[in-house]
Length: 177
Image 1 (cartoon, helix red, strand yellow):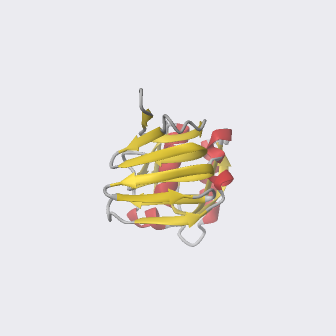
Image 2 (cartoon, rainbow, N blue to C red; image 1 turned 135 degrees about the horizontal axis):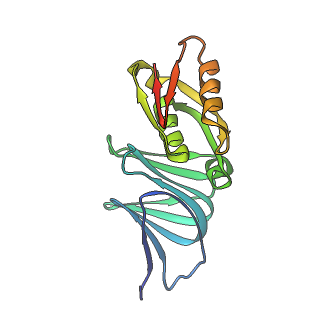
Image 3 (cartoon, helix red, strand yellow; image 1 turned 180 degrees about the vertical axis):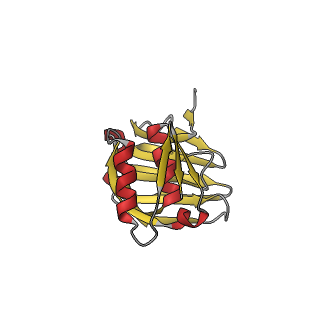
């Protein structure tokens, strides 16, 4: 554009943006606009997830939503919950958050339901929960996108001895019971 550099996003993306005060870089996602002032940052904005977030590695970003604006600082993550309308800011290890760029899936204290969504995107598989209670089991760790799915499932089973997690893989569908 003549006045700015707009981008619309659905999914996850990492940006490195050259500073240009005359033409700001704007990332649009639903009700949010991220106004970038020369920086590197990661946006996670999947339609089927209840949270959207932006994490700043370096530089500056202003998050605009409604009549509010929040200035993000390097090493911070802004997360908005679509269901509750609430947001939070937190200090994070940004290198761990962007490790997906090098083929690593890292996670810290996330539910099995959230982990399976990450695995579905990375491995092009579908998870079906036959035991709804297992969705809330929490996990921390990392996998590589070249790890065989069978190995990942085995690690998940070993990590939950108290619940006796069982996984059955049929073609590209994984049943969890």
